[in-house]
Image (cartoon, rainbow, N blue to C red; front, side, top):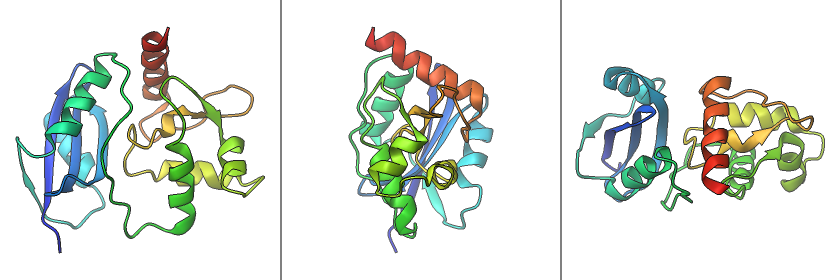
Length: 170
């Protein structure tokens, strides 16, 4: 079993939590919240893995996250660990990872991309379980009619992230 480490990062949007391993593979990310304690609680919710806090591990991805929330164009570059996830979810998350910074695609687009035309509701359910939002940019997936749809971090956060990316691209 690989040793798990976590890191809590303060950004201008709030506290973000990262869970990974000593080799830098990320397996969970919690979206910004007001307090450090809340970020930690959201990060470990539903997991039984023991992790050790580190202020020095995961430096590269931590820097990328800080730059992202400052409004810089960031295409996250890190390894992820999605072991234990089912094949459908991994397909959805892989397709979603192809959506570039500042772009949006529809749930139907993702469904078509994975060869499951019409499975847009299942795509939405898969994205709701995304353990690594931002890195797997599920906030960039919207309804075909242009409405935002759902988001594990809440609709307000989804709107803020999309606005942040639009402002940086312009």
